[in-house]
Image (tube, rainbow, N blue to C red; front, side):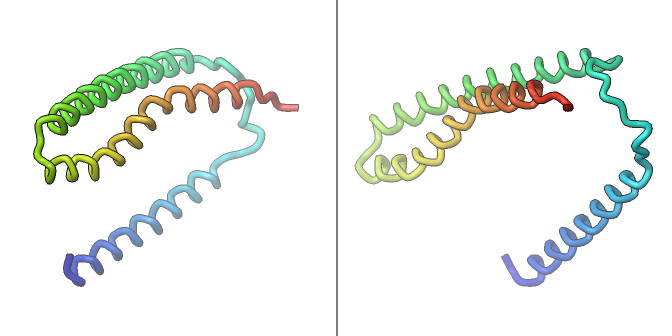
Length: 123
């Protein structure tokens, strides 16, 4: 990547950062403490929760299926490959295993976080 492109990307990211900070501070100035309520299960939240849960479920299933398919393909290529190809597949195997572990563990991790925060009550 040449230096000019790197400088342009840096400037664009800095502008985006500054704009996002100013937008969030403008939004925070309109919040009034008297308008905040702790209504759990307010109107419409059940529908949003169910849609979100179904989308997350679909993404998890697709991710798990794709990771198993990729593992099968890599395993077949590894078994059929030459010594040089096997060395190359070993290099790509570690990032794949980390990604697959994250996909499989993401649902459990998200469930633990959800249970922790739903168990917290305002005292």
